Image 1: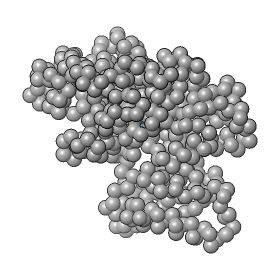
Image 2: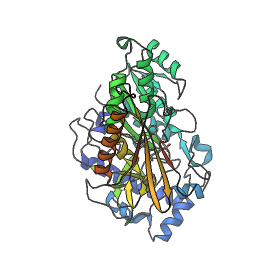
Image 3: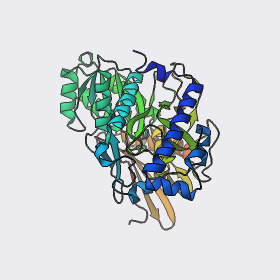
Length: 434
Ligand code: DLL
């Protein structure tokens, strides 16, 4: 099975653009009538729904940000009547109230279809057995992939996150062919599987659908090796829908964003102007088919790039680059911008290093200090002090050449850094908290 909805996934771009234009102008009319938030926002920007005739007019529309959802907590941003909402998800930010998202029946169907398309991109088909180890609940990971797998006609194992030994038992006994979870949990499951001494010929996993957090090419390789699978990057966010907004295909060269439902733009986060195709910036998404809580020009805060070139897989939908970080996750250390995923990329070029690390940032006097705890694997002989020193120096030098700043490296023994069953938190920024 190559595609789930072939005619849509391979639609010529001119047709896709026409569809987007029709849907965008219908959406703008709908939200102007149904949402007092958007009516006010359009009035303030001096925009009338009739001004939006084509997708090219999108730049005239105001942006929506996460704070708008919080300020209108819980249901103030909904564009549908509550009686038509059949599901509510919420994402718990680090501070304040969660952002709440309501789905109508059509929204759930659209999401399930996008998730089914995404599963097919990642090698699944109606005969697949999909183990969903994303959390179920207000988080969209579990239910999103669950409905997608059912829509596809595959069999779902709704394991949710955690309970690692049972995950491995069912993966083996139920002959799961796909695993869906965060990349950090996939790596942990792979490690636990290897340590359990399982006979790998009895494990039927073929591919993984991993996302929900930034991850590097190095982590992909580590997971693929441990689980003996092909690992695919899936992107999504609860405000827009959940997992399945975009996914890699067999080419693994960018993530197809389902443009019949979403219009993607990349903007400069400072000037808010669109950047050129292929340039890095903040991903902005407009949902053109959602009913419950359609969002116009939503600033995701995720950093990516976009290409509209046709993909060798035959899909015509644009591809976004792997999201390397959120703008909010950027650390500024001694004036230099550092993304945790850059550190991960460097660490995982070193054979003795495992994808488990912690980044601790402190301030000594006026100087920012970054210490990185790096977990080594069994290949390393901890008894040799000289090799410890040499490895620390090598890592520090590699990081310096990429980041341009000095960091302190502390090498730690196998299994000494905590593992994650959902999204990993690897940064401990203690500045201003000490
Ligand atoms: O994490 C939805 C999801 C679940 C996506 C499972 C994929 C798989 P939120 O909890 O609202 O929703 O978090 C969304 O997570 O804005 C990104 O910063 C980050 N993120 C999600 N997928 C990726 C990815 C879900 N593949 C936020 N790569 C987003 C990098 C990702 N970051």
